[in-house]
Image (cartoon, rainbow, N blue to C red; front, side, top):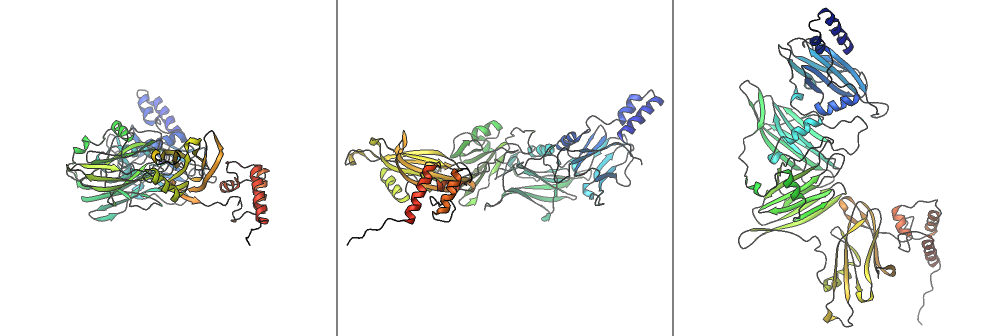
Length: 627
């Protein structure tokens, strides 16, 4: 059968109108391409995101597929398919290169059935000569009135971002939005298909896995590509979707599992499992649905947030372990015997995703997730959400909470102790995250003697020193470097007045710093007056690497050693001279080493200090011996 282009169809309609003037409008409407059919590359991209590769509307079939070259695919009917008209067969080119000199194209075809007989289309690769597999064919049934219905897997399995969001949002209970790892997910049955869907949220090193057994035998799953398509160059940090499905052909018991893994982090994968069953209906068709399970206990609803407003209120309230910082929003708190964890994920183009792992007496604590139906944004492949999970605690135990976030490589670990009072009531208490700080002057004296003025304590940097407040001196802390740091706590401890021999107000002052991001950090503690930091003395300076999840490692630097050979030589003097002359750049470690006056800047004064040091190395002062 000859395939006719849109123009040919319209011309035929005009000719028919001249012969049959009574029916011109009806016949023309049947042969024109509808307005909803894509007319350029951007239209096709929007169509792909909204409907996937196929749409049946007004009893007309539209198939849209993306390729890397014009004419690389022919859309052909399977032998024995019913007759149809081709209303459009067009290629639309994108305005950006995929790689090399290849551009993306959309192939748009539109068909109108002409007889009551099923139509099956397949793609034929003109370069390799290969046809699409049977399961990837486009199958449509046509009834006697020429009404069209799509009957392949695409009719029920999500194959675009809009359908993915619909599937994610349709299931509540413990299999709704969120799992133990706070990964957006859903497991369910549609028609004869088992579908598993999840999202990576763009979190670095995050990936999904899936498993399905049918009557105890493991089965392979197929992929459906639901990622958001772009009409321009794709961003590199976009969170991606994960959709797998399996067609069931006989009645069966099914178990489906989604697992969320984190690369480079040792832990058991976060997982959620759902039992399904496949049964035949009265017409002999297979249908997959959730297996019968005992009714869930409803007591939790008295304590656990189960609406979007309640979820966000809980998220931003103060709990056992909580934070309302931007991109680090989380909360762990108890209500009654229920331990509730909340986290915010931002998805889309942001890599931020808070993750909470709870362990009870060392074993992963199974949490139940709540679908709080957050608002869905149409602009992102993965939506920002407030996610809630809970577990009922029935006995005294120790719970360790590990919280991670990809935006600033944030990590926090806390222990929650659950005890029982005299009345048998469970009591929840989180450890003091600053428990390493002393509680008295005597403890402060011992801490300073053991750790010095700058030390690392459980991921924090503690700066301290003793001063006499009556002289106007104080303990000052300054930082430099790419990592940055913020003050999170200040405390001081003074000796009791009746123990002072000279009446002086001896005091230990402590400042606790938290690094802000990966990089290098210089920390200096001074005993000086606040209004004149240079009038005093430096107690200690230390350097740190701030690594993944803001973990700290001390960085050893020999002051004046710019070339890293472990000693001060003429080569270091040459490097500093070139830097001051504008012909040499210094990296961050070299800059730290060159700052010999410890004022966070490099100038001629530092060069003079280096020259004196070299002179002393070459001509050391003679030693004096007593005779």
